[in-house]
Length: 374
Image (cartoon, rainbow, N blue to C red; front, side):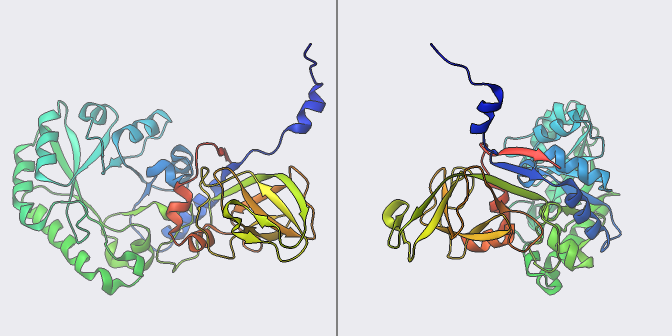
């Protein structure tokens, strides 16, 4: 016969679930910090599920703080934002699965096109007029129409009038992370050439936009008619010139603790040996949840106001931390990263420990990690 536990007793076995909490006040503060250095409209880019922070959550916070536009990867993401009640203009400019022209028209989504072929296909598919931004290659060579194909792109755009309306022209800064205006002078010049060529082709007036977070923060010459802020919304300045606020806190429970003697092997391959008697605690997140598997020495998490080092190899579902003389009870809460400094690691520290960039840290958090909003 099965014995049912009383609710109060059953709850004792429950732990704080691994959780990523998005901090909407931080999103707003970061947008305000960008607003302080530019006079042009701001597009809040919420691709990759709002850089791992929740596209709708980040979009709402950014728009409430004054963002005039939203940017997404594809039309399906834009439709999701529309269904969430967001009414500001939205631009979709990567479109890896192609362009649903009907959905774009119905949901008032602007589309960026970066090649003659893509523009021709869009014109053929458009039953209702679509607003288009012409994406020009301004030095990234990762998309955008090459310079020698601009005349044909503009010719096709003129022929497509009635099915499309060219309302914007855009590019990308290839070296904005350097935080040096001289590094992107060539891209700025190419963008000016593109703007002028579009106008000469009789396709204006157009909204011109080039800069993402780093350009917006470091070089007013890149601002043109709008800046696009994505990573900056969640506290990441790739140029590392401006202090932004981390917009999330990742926490996870201690699921096991033990006192071990000196010389105890920890984790797969005995990659770590304890050098003294110490307490080890297992935290319930691993590389399947987004903890980078390869970490430099010094990586750690915060528990009860103290940063404890991660020891041994990162497992799929767990990490082990050395807590020294402190025995941590099952259910103690570890902060993997968050804002505030001190013992709490930042996303930037995790990127350094993993030899990567902060973007990969926040976008790599797995689906087993619950999401919340504060």
